[in-house]
Length: 326
Ligand code: XMP
Image (cartoon, rainbow, N blue to C red; front, side, top):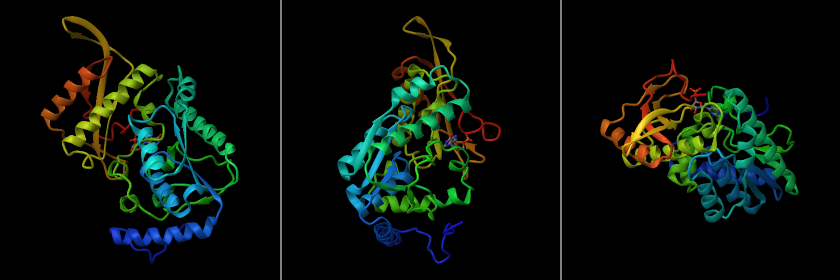
């Protein structure tokens, strides 16, 4: 395999100074590799692709074309943040594609988890390839590959990341962070001036909120997942749990139960909260959330999220439960 081993002489990037040295080296390497040619990048807003985007913007400016595909399964505020940070603040050449209807129409009525993943993955590739075809003179494809992806010890991207890139696009690859571990990517991202909530964000699966809306996705239940997730993230940030809990999110299962509101009977969904800690995502423990914080989150979710009348907390470690629900 060509050049896929981290050089033994490479220092672990733990400080801003080391990050600056790495950034300078990579800017020179990128310029040497691509010269005045154009590079395409699928920019999800995750830390890896964001760091690659920031590096390439510094190295080649407008010759980087970023494509941000909104598959309709992103968290609240994510596409807006990608546009704000990259287009407005960094002046990136950013193509934003709102493909929500396309994805949700294809997913309508599909309840099998693997089928859902396949549809999301192949639709993503189609949308990205269509956007690539609209661009003239692209010769390179940048990717946010990191070292665990190469080592194949990364449980996340290696077995089912649907955010992966089209193999049928035959461009030369630009992979500036392929020898970095996640913690190093974050140090570099911080040094590149990316916002903290992008640099330190929790893992988010490629199929996005789609795996947190078990069974056939409907727009209404998806909205309940998105709104409850936003409340949970807001409250975790407010109470200092952000960055301390590895992954936390909500799930809205496809069943309803009775409730009562203002003296009248309701028949609505429950929201399930999951908050776990892990080192490698192969096993996970459940986070001990302060009870008064839980009460406050329940109060907010049941009052602010339409169609929800209960909140449940998932106490199951992995094993036996996986982190996600599908
Ligand atoms: P599980 O649910 O298998 O998840 O315990 C382990 C870690 O992998 C993430 N995950 C995914 N990431 N595409 C991804 O990119 C996926 O389809 C996917 N499924 C699970 C999950 O969020 C957790 O961090």
